[in-house]
Structure formats: C-alpha cells, structure tokens
Image (cartoon, each protein chain N blue to C red):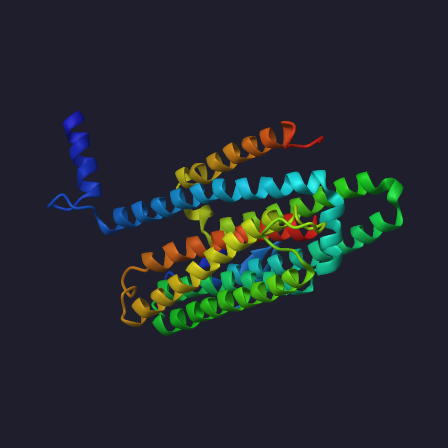
Length: 210
Length: 126
C-alpha cells in the first residue's frame, strides 16, 4: 500500500525519466522567490526599526525634515511605482493570454516606471544634500537623520535598479519567444517587483507621512 | 468584496463584481485594485497633511493626534500592501504554504522590532 502511494506520488511529480514536471518546476521556482522575499522582509525590518527609534526619540528632527521636504515629489514617485506594479501585472496577464506584443509593451512600461522613480529619487537626494542631510556625521541638526533615512530608501532604490535591469532581461527573452509556452520567468520577476512596491508603500508612510 | 470571473479562453475577465455592482473595465480586477491603491494614497497624503496642521494648531493634544495619525496611516498602508500581495502577487490563488512563508518572517520581524523598541538605551524612553 505504502509502495503504491509512493508510486502514485512519483507519477504525479515526475515523468518516466524521474524528471520534475513543468508544473512542479514552476511551483519550486515560485517557492524559491517567496523564500528570498521573506529574507528581504527581515533586512528591511532592521532598517525600518532604526528609523522608528529615531522618530520616537527625536521627533523634532523628523518633523523639521518633513517641513523642509514636503511630500509633493515623493507622492508623485509613489504613484509612478504603483502604476509600474499595475503595468507589471498587466504584462503577465497579456502573456498568459498569449499576447506577446502586449506583454512587451506592459513590461516596457514597467521598466520606464522604475527608471522614472529612480530619477525622482535622485532629485530628492540632491535636494536633501542641499539641505545638509547627508550620510556622514556633521555638527548640523540632521546628523542623526542621515543614515537612518538613506539606508532604507537607498537600499530600496537599489532594488528598483535591479528590477529595471531584470525587466530589460525579461523584455529581451520575451522578444525571442522564451515565455510563449511558460511565463514563469515573468511571474518570478513580477513577484520581486510587487514586493519592491509593497516595501515602498510601507517606507512612504513610515518615513514621509507619520 | 471584489472578485473577477474568467473568460472561456482562460484569460482574466474584464468584468469585476464590486460591492454588488458589476464593473467592466480593461484589465478587470487589476485595474480596480490600481484605482483603489491610488484613492487610498490620496486619502493617506491628505489625512497626513490635515493632521499635521491639526497638531500644529493644538499642541496640547499633539500626543493624541500623533497617535491617531500613526494608527490611521499605518492602517491604510497595511490595506494597500495586502491589496498588492493578494491580487498582484496572486496570493489568493496560491498554496497556503506561501502565506506561511510570508507571515512567519513578518511575525519574527515584528517581535524583533518590539524588542528593540523596548530596550534602553537605544529604544523608546531615552
């Protein structure tokens, strides 16, 4: 009985040569991406708690920074990233429907959204540097804010940069028809990109609004 | 609250049932979720600006208003995050184990954060 069950399980998961089926491979790949994202949660949490401690202990510094910066640029950037997440899921939807041209268009827009976000972040950092909010320790009132602000936002920006590169690779492979029969590569990129979006949703609220 | 049906050809439907109404829009549930995210973001920013002004005008109630602001804005951010994870990352269609993979580190991270916020001299109360 036990042998029969094992055989049945084997037949469901493997072909005659003992290889995993495409569906099983896809499930394993997705689980791998989710586990990777789970580890990212811990890394971002450490950076976020560093900021929260400053926010609680030195509220005046953060409030002054909010006054100086405003929320216009960062809100626009947030909309860009939310839109890019929408473009991403529409790209996967198009490929699942067999529409390769549509997928290329949507993923292209995703890459553009990520690039615009990075340009916005560069402009913001330039304004901050002009105010004297820098990474290193200075005698200014902002000395405690620099690292606690830049660490989570720059680390997130680095993820967006990697995402843009990944999107371009998806476009290259997609144009060759790599995903015509199995769009798992797009789905894996999508999980990463949406996670980057979720992290920004939390950072935007915690760092710029609360 | 919101659900999408599927076409016969397996593509996602453009018709979404939302709060008892049927909405037909290009992109279906994904477009509706994006609309929800955009509206919540506008509410979030406007609430933050309004409460910042209220705190400025009533310093005697600043602690209470700041607590209300934090709870309200973090609540909205969590709803937005759940929308992305549930619909865009397709957690609603995935195996339960992926929800555990996501929730377990969140739980561990939350406990770690609470610990770090509690211990002096780096934490709250210094």
